Amino acid sequence: MSVKDTNNSVVVMDNTMVKAKFGKLTDIESRFIFFAISQIKYVDTEFKTFRFSVGRLLKELDMPGKNYTFLFGVLKNMVERTIAFPDEKGFTIFPWFSMLRVEKKEMIGIRFNDMLKPYLLELRKNFTKAELSLILQMKNHTRRIYLMCKQYLNMGGFEKDINALRTELELGDIYKQYKYLARDILIPARDEINKLADLRCSFEPVRVGRSYSLLSFKVWPAPTSNKSIGKNAGASGKNTPAQNKQIEEKRRKADAEHQEQLAKDSQMALDLVMKDWDKKCKELEPYLVRKSEQWEHCLDTINGALGGAASFDTWFVITELFFDDRRNAYILTPNNLSAKVIHDNYLNFIAEVLTKNKIGFVTIKIVTPDIKNQFVNAVSDESTGEEDIAAEDLDQQPSLFAEAEQTTLF
Image 1 (cartoon, rainbow, N blue to C red):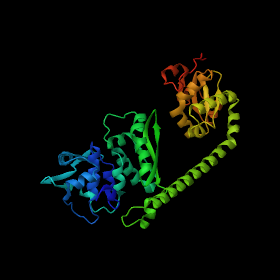
Image 2: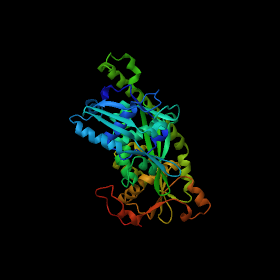
Image 3: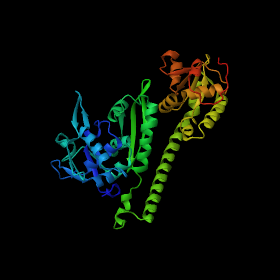
Image 4: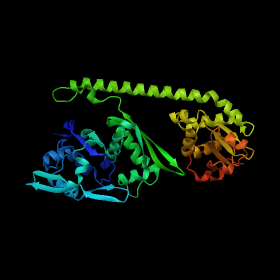
């Protein structure tokens, strides 16, 4: 049975194990762990000693060209690998395996540590189940994130503390900054899951104070699955080219319908905002000076810099620029979500855009229409709680324009 023939093999583990620290496993070691777990049967009440030929293991672990010596080195290390289960008072560490047996360099025997019985045997509730064939196609960190998503599939999503995620993925001292964690781990894992798996996922960082502390994951079933027509597959259990084409067409159709519904929902939300937008802007005019024409030029610059990306339509179409009598700039957004996203991701960008369009400012604040209450109640700028960026800090920010014009700021 090769990797391609493991369609009926599943990995089942207690949800506590999904959140455990697997140790710093190599990709091959991780593949072996999941392959070994898939050999456990639903009716097993005790761990058995699994015996595999060297040839089969090399094939299962996708190690073409390797030999017994290489495989033995991998499995010898596996006996020394541990898994840690954190709890409120500390954590408990167990070895993954209790025994490794080699027979004439042809057969390998291995047995799980009995201390792992509660997490792998006789599971009736609070467990996560996934197809081995999917897991083996994924990269190391993707496998762990996929199982997290699989665990919460029926709930539609979950929140994850970023430091807890880094701990579970055994990242150590690397990727402490969110932007690098997202670039090298989260985004590649999301893309790989959405390409290969039986579910779809997305994530957004949640800022607490001045830094990102949480990740909000959304999880939903994939539009279609190969199983939908699997009963019509040939005797070999594989789909014909015509059936694969049918599957792909169904997937594209379902994805298109999903995107169409998202577009309708977005337009409905946009219409609701636009209905009262001008009125809300005018309510600020007794307190602030509206700069619609100048902001239109800025929006053209933003749209051009973003290359017409969807982020422009999502976050910048409904915005307005105001100034107070001290040359403080206010970017008005329709709601707290828009204000948060623009502040967290585009504040420095907007500062450069204003500079490029020769619009002087002292500070920039990203605000919502509720700011009117601060003027009505004569609340000072210092008590607004809004973070801002000062003009003199611009030269410390990474440039978004190769040849931004230098201007004298007021």
